[in-house]
Structure formats: C-alpha cells, structure tokens
Image (cartoon, rainbow, N blue to C red):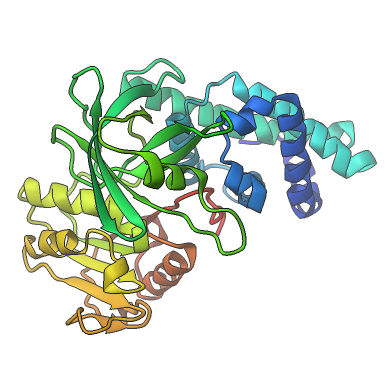
Length: 397
C-alpha cells in the first residue's frame, strides 16, 4: 500500500495527473521509441501504437491502479494485474525492462506537468509506479516458474501441420513443435503469442487463443484477418492469411492467460461474439472430452452464420453437454440459422442458474452490454471474467 507520506499527495494530485495521463503516455512512448526503436519494431504492436489504443491502455492502467490504492488500500487489484502480467509473460517481458519504462515515464511526466511536478509529487507517483511494477514483476516471476521457463525465455519454433479456411476472414492452423517434442499442457482459455518477420524486417507479435482442448498432439489457433476501414489492415493477421502454409515454421510463445476455468463444478455462462469464441471453443472441448457434468449456458453473437467461425463445431460441442443448447444471435440470420435470433444479444429471456461464473470474450461493446445485464440480474462483479484481444481499454471500469 502507499506510504503515509505519499497517500495525501497522490489523492490531491490524482485529478491533475489523471487528466494529463493521456499526454504523458503519448510523450512517454515517443521518448521510449526514440531511445530504443527496436521495442517498436519487435515488441510493441505497431497498429495499436498508430491508432492510440496502447497509449489509452497505459493511461488507464496507471490511473486505475492509483485510484485503487486510494479507495481500497488493503486490497490489491489482482484481476487487473493478472491480465497485464499474463500478457507481459507471453511477450517475454523481463524485470529489467521496468527500469527503462520508469526512466522514460518520469521524464514524460516532467515534460507535461512542468513545475507542478514538485519533488514531493514526483516521489509520490514514483511510489505508485514501483508498487505496480513490483507487483507485476512478482506475478510474472511466478508465471515463468509455473511455465518452467527462465525469465523472458518463452519462445520456441513450431511447424504448421495443417491450415484450414474456416470463414472468408478466419483461418485456423494446427501447430506442433519443430523438434518433435510434445506440445505441452495449457489451461483451456489461454493464448499464445505468435511472432512473424515482416517485409521491412520488423518482428511483430500478436496473441491468439488456443481454440481446441489440451491433451492433443497439436495446438490450434484461429486467426481473424484484421481489416481496418480507416487505416491499414492488421500486419500479422494479414501475413498469416497470405503466406503461412503447412510446413512453415512460426515462432510461438508458451501459453499464458488468466481467463481459465475455475476448478469447481459450478454453473457457467460462456458468452462470446465474433472471433471471441476461440477461447470458448477450448473450454467447451475440454468440458466434453473430460465428461464434465456442470451446467453450461452458452451464448454467441455474430454478423451472419457465414461469419461465425467454427460454427458447426461450436454447436456440436454445446449439444454434447448435458441439456446443451447454443443461444445464437446474428445481425443478419438469413435462412440458414434456424433457432437464431436477429439483432444483438439479450439475456433477458435466458434462465441463469444461481452461483454461475461468467466468461465473456468479444468486442468491448458486446462485453460491456452483457456485463451490465449480468450485474443488473445480481451476478457479483467478481464472478464476471473477460478476455480482451489487444490493449485492455476496460481497465478501471
């Protein structure tokens, strides 16, 4: 928790620092990449830097963490820290990199706040940063230990065994270690990072959920091609769609991610939209393959049946569960989706069992709408979990 000296300073300056944190983040990244251009080329998502999403995520995480230190000093924001730490581990982030971030972040705060950043204010916010950084380092150290990896040593070469076009915009890949070793375990709902070398020499990294259950000889990832109406298409997804073929070798991380099944028999709500069904598929596959008898309410939303990746597989997996039914919403159902509802997801007509744990994955508007409905129906916030593809812009909400 914050020290007695820092608490009143952070409380008094949070509105000012919070109001300026977006500008601070922008200058921070500019300073960081000017000093270390390889970080932008080979670690950070250039697309999210270009559209500003990464800056918003950094700003949100720092402001949210400071607010939590003030509002609940006795509690640590474990859910927020776990999401960030798992993403960091999947990128191979090391503890010494936090010192680099600290140096450029403090310089950016000085640039933006000027004389308002007195020695006392700087010391207080320095304390905020290191409380968050050290908490993340501790979680990441544990994640590396659990994965049996040295700090940052998460990468290995995997060969594409099979490629399948699931929809016009989604392709799935079966991948296996190039050295012939077993693929290794993971928890249903986790993801891996994939690094590819682009034409300009940049080695860009993206995360993809493992979309089938563990215990198989291969891992499967399902990649949606990112198409941006107002900007360039996704660099890595486009590369994989256009170039990745069976026999090719990819650089892939060990599995990470905290959106995983609780180890109990309680009822579940699995709600997905679009490509957000990929971690859900792994969970469903695991439940079916292990003969789980727990009650599952499964919900999926998409634009059309043709856009619904792994549609028949998801339907079959849900039907294999006790009393299983996949509740479907399509913006345009057409004639090929009997039983589906036109429009957006509405949980109002669904019976939700007491004590359920909810898992949400999909676009932010979808998750916010479903989460809001669950809260109104009395589901405790701590039992609603979610996964975000890309920077976590939901922090603190």
